[in-house]
Image (cartoon, helix red, strand yellow):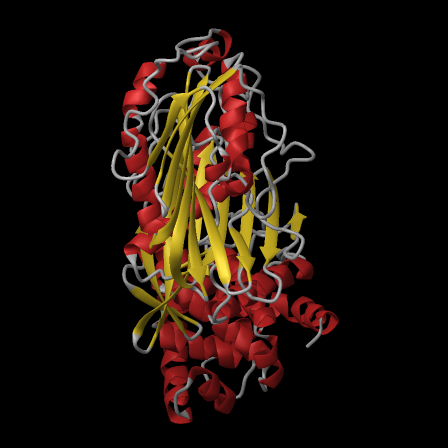
Length: 164
Length: 469
């Protein structure tokens, strides 16, 4: 992968992967930072990336692992969301339903949330979700089923509360 | 039949997007990736990792500053400079000073990303610096290198906050941690003899299946006023605490000229920092002019078998081979101030020579210029290799008189300790300088022994420097 190919890959997929990681972790700035970091690592290991069947999955997985590392979560809680020398986040305020969805996703168990995001947001078939997560397809199907039910219940509760 | 509400949330989930964010330019991401790659490759490049451990320590700005500590004492609140904080790095600031040579050129950038790694993930200064300059050096023919960032904040409080993050970072991953298949161990380290307002250091050691490999990364952060300097370099032998400390000390030493130049960001600016210092420059004190014939310059010299020369204004200096022994990497000191008077005393055996030269100068400034200048050639020459034999030089600050430092050379043959060493030591008291040369052709000296030797020589000079005051 040469510089042009990498730049094209980065520009074409950054927003998409960031949204997926955001849905997984519920923090937009954190997602953006981790995805940028994952892309940097992708460039650092571009030979490995060349061999990867799904480079986007490689970046997404790396970003997600970064985001959920215990150290990073700890540090993140101790400092502002902005970070040094990176471009400042410029984003419009999300809609109410968007906020509710993200909040509900955050309340799901991590494994269910990851499965839902990869299947429904990243639009991966169950087989690919299973490969990316590293578990059998049956496990993913179970997580999707339980995750959908839990998410529906959480959103219903949220809607009920907002109407009360 | 599916619940309509269920279908609604699934549609929303499948249409999930994120408000448009502004990513870093791809070039910045690639640069950060390049640095990750260099660092990882550097850790496995056998034989190319002696970058840090053998760098001589520029000492000009080190005098008068003690060792830092792993847990530095809290700094008092910084006061505001009269004209406000300097928030722009001056044009022409030579951040790469002391980093490279003709074979290892230094590249500088104002838009590099500060991405020192802690516990396997990038760590950043917070809050955001308002200006930065970065310099990077890669050793020719190897993967070892040295990166340096100067970051400037709006005020000293923000710089202190950044330093606190730096100091706290190792606490988040005690012990060994993994990152992309690499295992590291984090060691907080003594920040060494930094001349900065505060300093802190880590060493990250690389593990393999059997434990520490000895290869690692040394990172030092130093703050002056509202600016922070971060140096990162590859080191080896980091499994040993003493070697880790040496790596930190060397990195601190290499950055000393930069820390000196960072006075522009300090509360006091670059004028003499204290009334004592300005007084010392303006007002001569202690020994000056003609040196009395009965000055006890021989006190503390060896007294055993061998030949004694002096003390006298004129002795035969040929046996001490000053022409060669004050030279490093083929370079002799130049442009040194001429002393008003000079007085000599020496002791020789077939294997070792000690020569003391006491000089008086027209001013404290001239004396200081001489003291710094005579060691500068050693500071600029960490290694002088000819065939299988390498002379390795270090400059070590000392604690005697108004200013003290030593250049210590030891020999390595094919990377193993060799026979012989040399010490050039200067102590300034007022406008007088005591220069001591020790040349040994029969004993081994390693890096740790070099520091002990320089300390011992200072102790033996105490009587003389007392007489200079």
